[in-house]
Length: 366
Image (cartoon, rainbow, N blue to C red; front, side, top):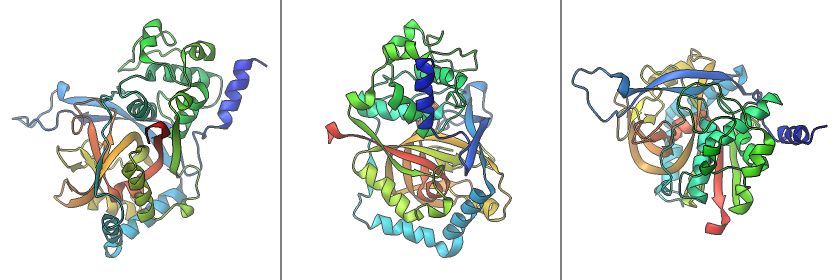
């Protein structure tokens, strides 16, 4: 058997199937977001320069997992129990506020592709290993295209789980962006819109790649993965939040996979912290849809980097309701989206809609 085929088969055993019991990726959902939302328009009309098309992963939920979302929402709504849990965290041994930033790594832009998982993982690795925009997402995705042509796993261009991207990097390494000028499967720069992608074979990739996990002594620790867990065995919301905050308190950034509800009337977000629509919160409208079983089975999925939290931060939803306690996220929709490229998610929203999370650590910097 061809040695490349053998390597691909070994790699595939380490991956999470695109269908993972609780949910599956079934392509992408195209959405439009507003840009520079801090700028007011005298006529209230957005021009083509003020909007951007992005892709969310098209996530289909199992009926059992949809029921689990309903159970979590009941905990949040009944007697404000979850709010009490969040308050307990404020009084714990953890810091009340952490902001790790991204170590000079700029805001990335995945264009209108569903490549968020690749951008979240490489962005976090750049921040801890290079303090710069170093890793080539293009080459990694072009390798993924080759792997998808020779197996039944996704390339990453139009959706993947974080675990698969991490496995790809652990097995095959990363390539620096300085190599893009020589071509990655026929492309020399990352395309912002849909094109004929081509692919980069394993031999060409390995000639230029380096094992970043070994060279930089980086570890990716699983915090939660609902894809590999029985939804009944997932940790309580308070325990999950404490785990996430503890990692950030120890200066470890977290790559996050999150469900985004399609029912939102405006944009893909529904709250304001610094700028309009820079946050995700559990509005009464969203809670009612889940509790009344009228929420769609298909939701959007997205991956970002958690870079901080603030127990005192408050986001306000479209009805004026306040949501206290926010995680700070580095997104990959460009620097004109959200809060100059950053977004926020309330503690309760994250605890309910999280898909997977991995902390990224570098023992040499400890």
